[in-house]
Image (tube, rainbow, N blue to C red; front, side, top):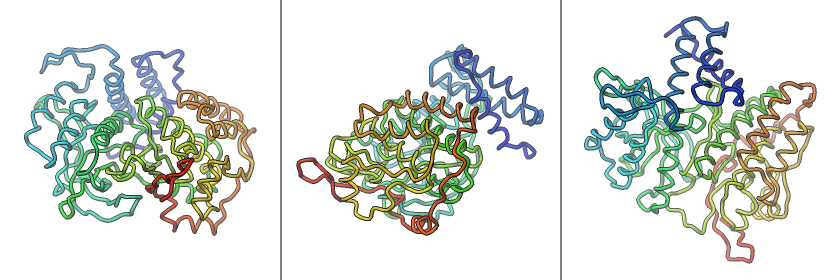
Length: 456
């Protein structure tokens, strides 16, 4: 395995996935076969790397069959159930987890039930939510503060589950690896709806590779606060743009935008709304050159009142500011702000110091200025997404479809892309990197006024 170039394998798998014509390869089996043939035909991979790439493809195929309940079933030699997975049996994995329910507890029945319910919907061994004893974490170091959460890095001894050993009928762990700990405030006072949403989003994050993976929960013994244990990423979108803005091509920007839209599509497909999309919770991993969305279902304090709004003001849709609540279309507005930020390398509305004025201006239709030429098709779609009327914004299905066409169009017609991209003002960029509030979300309380505008 030491000679296998994992990054190259991931790149080939990404190219294979992007090359599928879904009008021709209409079911999961045909799509998996196409990817396997693509791997075998790739001249950059060694034979050993092709074998590993096919193994990864087969694992992904098992996951997709279970998610979509599609494909040929087989009789498991152990439990005699008709399972969809070929590298493991999803029923054996769930039964193993159920058998071990008595071997752990968080000390909170609601948290225990949350984790147990997630485990009974487990898709694959690497995507299991579990209770992680705090003493299984070491080298815990403070990283930063984000909104209402303190964030730490740590090493997880033994690490997540990696695979199912059918011979001994048990799960095998990956080994020690780095994780992120995100502290959750006031969970003991959380409403039932918070726990229901938490379950929904924990399950979603472990069904889709486009969502930042959460391994489970732990509890800080020093203050009694629960903590999310999450996959560690290299950098967020805000930081990435600060570091790479002047080197990025337009096709690279368009691809980043597509991957974010693709991730949001799967969130909405599960009937979930993110509510707090901004460049601080779009995360990048160099390992497989991919972008993922984080913070699903855990935006703000667990006990935040229903009369409050939690978010990062420049990304909040005008109707939400006006007290009309979050919808799928308010997430689309946030996508428009991200599209602008990806274009120009800095957060929207950086020149506003007074948030009251900014809030009123957003409601009045003020949008970030387009300060240099950007691709026309990209610009038109961005402006649709930030329309003041939510009904005029596209849904994620339409947005994803249209953006996929835009990505292909500019790949095939690079001469239509602008030659020059405005450089980020160095002084502004330095100020931005030192301004924690720009990257964090906060709690806003609605004022009792005619339009319901919020304050903080």
